[in-house]
Length: 229
Image 1 (cartoon, rainbow, N blue to C red):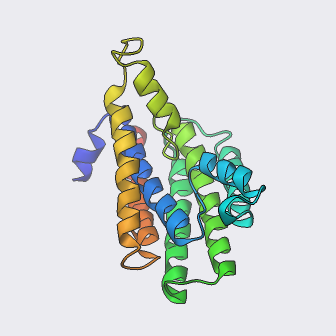
Image 2: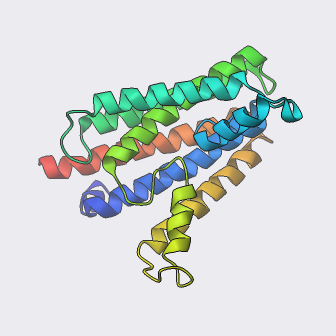
């Protein structure tokens, strides 16, 4: 199994792993928006829009949760960029460490939600979404460093734009359509899975997402040893 994994070309494996992370973002955002007071923890565009509407009192939208999640995301992204500042290569030990930290933090927050129950107090919910935002910021910065084209793992707006612009109705270039479609469908599927898992428990989605992120970190680490061998 490990030998087969190491035989996969870097570019192909990195694409697969980033698509898995895109799926987990859909799960995490579903948990944050539906289960934790309408806060996006991966899609910061959504938080900015919510904040813009909330400041004028539209539909009693939250302000503190999205604001702290946005701050957490930026802090996490800054940490990721700082750690990878002098890293060489697309996947290094530092890359593995950062994804492992994201996995552990997500699993720890899942455990917290299982401990407090399906209806956490507002302070607990805000703490969870803030820390999840930080985790997604680290993930986004690390994915940006790996630089798989059209797959940022946390947002698909630019991916959808590229898909439409390069389609036969657009420029006709068509390059990267398969990965773009995959990214859109996976974040959609992740959101559906996250919403479904909320029927079981509010921490269920984070448990599944954390385990998948851990698998990504492990697979990337095992594969990177091929280059070092």
